[in-house]
Amino acid sequence: MELNEKQINYYKKWANKRKNKLKYLLIQGMLYWALPFSIFMILFELNDNQFVFSMKILKDFIILYSASSILGILLALFSFKNIDKKYLEFKNKSII
Image (cartoon, rainbow, N blue to C red; front, side, top):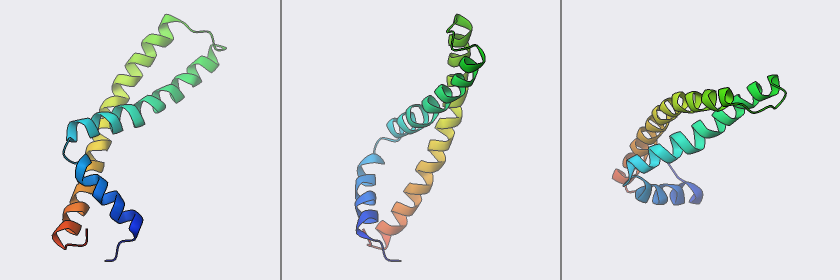
């Protein structure tokens, strides 16, 4: 399998990212996935309340963010394993 220049650069950067798995899981799972999802979902509740902020909405946001963070970390874990598997295959074939 031939890799283009963009893919080769991606996997070269991955070599550094894969060293810190926990950081990857927290950033990808909690920051890039769970936070935008939680904000998006809480906007629906704010829309129903005519954009009046209350402690109930804050409490709902914290609960939603906590639950979606767990899901986000699991998604990031699956993503990490998939990317790392491909990286190791390419590295063993000396493509990278």
